[in-house]
Length: 392
Ligand SMILES: Cc1cc2nc3c(=O)[nH]c(=O)nc-3n(C[C@H](O)[C@H](O)[C@H](O)COP(=O)(O)O)c2cc1C
Image (cartoon, rainbow, N blue to C red; front, side):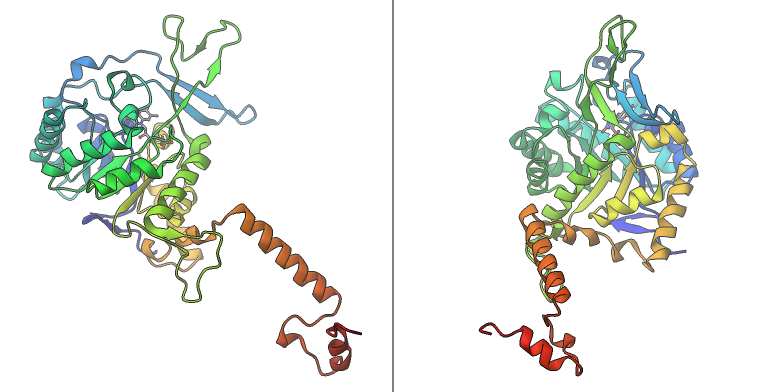
């Protein structure tokens, strides 16, 4: 079995699979279950200092199913961050770390645009022993009204300032979680990395309206007859997540650019943040899904909705699937293939040029023309020479 372990920002994970912030990390009980089932790390549900402002509704999920198989492939939620009191969380962080000293426990935090609040939440979680932070700049519903979540993540200036506050007191790694509800995801990511964050995570959910009920004519999920756009996750978002992770991977680690890769193998686009980390999220349910994100530069791969569908034992399926992929390609470690596919992205103009070049070479070969020195043959030497003469 290949080695699935990964060291990222000094954190040692037995495998790259991380519970993404949400219901699968919503209290100490389920976090313990995740460690028992072998998850590489757990990101707890997002917390804030004052949970009394967080009021959830029910129903708060709506799902999209394949009409033939009935399998769920799209999932919308209008869930807020944790409604459990901050002090309860701090106690649970401490107890969880006592029980699983080697388990990587990451606190997901979110606050209003106030320096003292961000500093207090960072310091109090840190004192409770968490191994790292993920800053939630990406929740798309409910909290933007309070200028939190995606509202901050869509404004690189504010995001940079907030990351600076957190980094001024954080003694453990800090990841900033990006919203996909933005045109150029690299811009807030650069702001976070400029402000000293060790890494970025992407993506959070995509703002969506999943369905309108054709009997009641009401959008879903319907609460007292009304609804609100929510966050879309699950298999359906994976192609968008792959694209955004590709953009972040190229910006951070380098990649293709419409020019051929140099003879020494170096990439035409130079990476701006080779020493930082990338955590990929969005629609992962198999080891093959995860391998694709790692090929685009991810160090770790988070799973949220997949755990809600398949349960915590999914960790074993993911590890087996990723191990099988690595064995097939004879990769011994994650670092051997991380970011390997970034070089194969180019511009559309370059695709056109490459295709025209390939067609021309094919036509020349069909006409019996020598285009490479290896094509000369002893038998047809004179004929081949003749075909290359311009002024016959
Ligand atoms: C019900 C639900 C609740 C979520 N709550 C949070 C949250 O509190 N904080 C956060 O950063 N992301 C939250 N997310 C987003 C996930 O962490 C993840 O970024 C997103 O769902 C895409 O990944 P997935 O397809 O594996 O679910 C939530 C997602 C779902 C489905």
